[in-house]
Length: 302
Image (cartoon, rainbow, N blue to C red):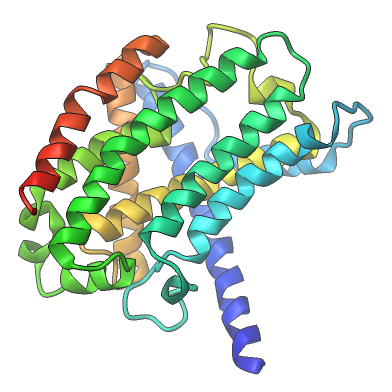
């Protein structure tokens, strides 16, 4: 019983670190994008102020139970990925509960939050909610296809679906990273990451400057705070997932921070240089180049 409590405490500490690193990384990326556009950008501490303000607010508006469970489901997906993801390879304290789940469970949690938000938006009563639901589910479904093919290729290569065992197989030097032992699957995975992180050109659900609706305006007070919390956590754990699959994992926090920052920066860089796609362009794009590369990755290891 004491061991379980100790494990939970270390896991909560890890979640606290990931949350704060996610907010700092998000603020840093917004500063980078602002400087590219010759603007000053937000203060680096702005995400913490926003979170405190949102959690301090209350609302008397009611749209139904499922509308307010949407952010909870969304956060549940991000935290679920975190719980079954090893943060630091070889660390008893920072491995979380990675021994209890594998890549299949992680993929389920990725879709879990998206489905929860779709159900919440459906009960919001806004006539344009169906637009966001259609965009989000259509794009994320096509994102999952090349990612799943990349995962299948890794399972064939390493003969396991355990993330910890995949990281273990990449130890011993950079040349053992999946990036070099299976570059085709890595390309498929990194292209699907662009859609998973939902920066331009794949930021179709929020569609900034296009329609004045979506989660940031439909949700408010603590509910929007939950979504912001999930955004900080989810970006870090998704970057950490790809770090573990393709870039050898991390054996210490410094390595973890550097690798997740660079992986996250990849999507921000693409977003800065490319305008947003329309939904039909986004879906077709994922069903062309990333899908073809994913199929090739599987064929090479059959």
